[in-house]
Length: 448
Image 1 (cartoon, rainbow, N blue to C red):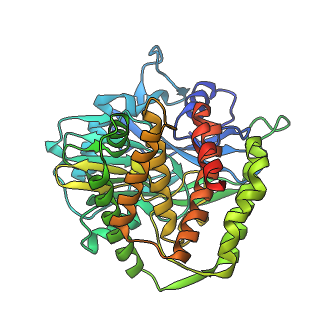
Image 2 (cartoon, rainbow, N blue to C red; image 1 turned 120 degrees about the vertical axis):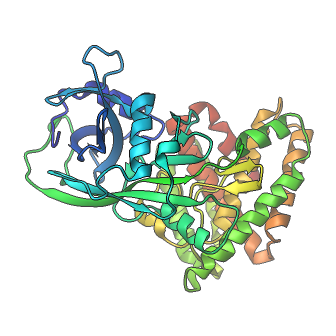
């Protein structure tokens, strides 16, 4: 299963391109090739498959599929090839459980090799996989796929694969070693080196694989095993419920702010203190705004005023460090042990290089402020005096828990709030058009 044409991949492509985790929507992408790694287990057969997607503009992208053997007559078959029929293994509980047990128990060759590449498993905290009784896919919308194992563990299957170490693994391991208690514990990680096709141009003239023998070695992370936090409540839903009933959420927001501050202190210790020209940051924000205007025409009339929000940065040198990168209420969980922060990969629509760059800690603060604003959408009238008062109180409590901003830092925060809302308009346009008024309203308010 490698370097195939798109002619017989219609069902698989329809499945992929409609998935929440597929970030190439609206770009004219085509499925160029599939490359299968050697099976993790053979009975039932489960294998990791790398799908290469090409675009008319920009580099190829690589997406991970987890497929299990099926009967050709099954309704959920996504692919039929010379090796049989295949379905989405995350919808196949029996195959999923066998796969999870094998990984956790080390019942597989930890450096299994196949013709197209190999995968390996690093275990940091051993787990007895034979004790796992259930494996089920988490049903919420995610940019990756989480597999819940009983009530104790989660296997996070990374969907869009990029060269190098996955930031979620790197950040979690570092914070674990630093003793930070507001994040989950990592037990293991799965990696791969696989040969994938070289760059292709997907277009009407080239609807299938381009005739090329170029193969690239993609070294990447496939999955991580983390503890399942006890009785977790989704932070986004929790705050929406509070907002809907206009219940005070200040204490919870304050604790989240304090947890983020602890993470930032630990992340700062991992790197050398440095600063970035505020002009460079303002230029980057302005450039992102310019690109966003092409995708969201509603932004065009706001562009001059938004640039003025970025301009105060030009007189500064801005301290930067490793950050969460995509912080919002959906990245928080209320557990029996308090609030926890999850998912350190960064913004899904940004490149790996962009997400690995250090940034201002106020980027994360702005992300949560924007998310608290989103929570008011759960109220009957998000623009009512009562709803806005709820938001202002939650925002103030979060900032109090994090640590008050100075005058210069307030300017930095405002710029990052605007930048985040601009990003949100593009995201909503591509994924949830009915939500686009939320970030657009925020931008109007920031402009005043």
